[in-house]
Length: 218
Image (cartoon, rainbow, N blue to C red; front, side, top):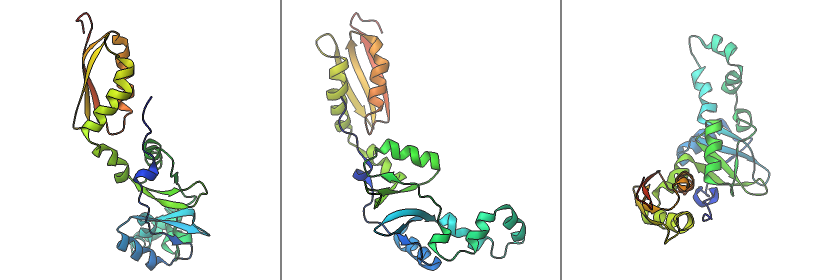
């Protein structure tokens, strides 16, 4: 019943910086600065993503340089100790790489980011090769959708099916992404169903109802 949802390839950044396993520490830092990103995919071969190197992977080199309690930190955090001495992306990177398919929905990508606690995801094609990068900011682009576009989809894909005229008369209003259904309906038991379906429409911030039964009761 719904229109086709946006997928990751619709919002991802296609031109991205990446490094190979042998990329030296300073080159990684320089690329992050030049591209203004906090993480870089690490690739090998024709572009298969094998890991990700982030600012968090680089910081132990500075953190453990001359800290008064450096010895204690090295005992408690052996992974950071290893990274403090690492010189290449292959030794610094976090692996296996957490990636998302280009055809995944935005909701699927958001769940991966939330589960893994990361801000950016390498995007891979069907062959597993790097196709782009998607960030939290990219996923939020759907909330820039015009109110009238949202209203039209709710009218066409939801209201017309759940509350068809003439037994029901429903008007769809959208302001700043908040959808309100106003009018009279025949079956108030369908309101929770409508709420779930409207919230699933991309760009919807919230949903409200000002509906009465056709006999006038609310």
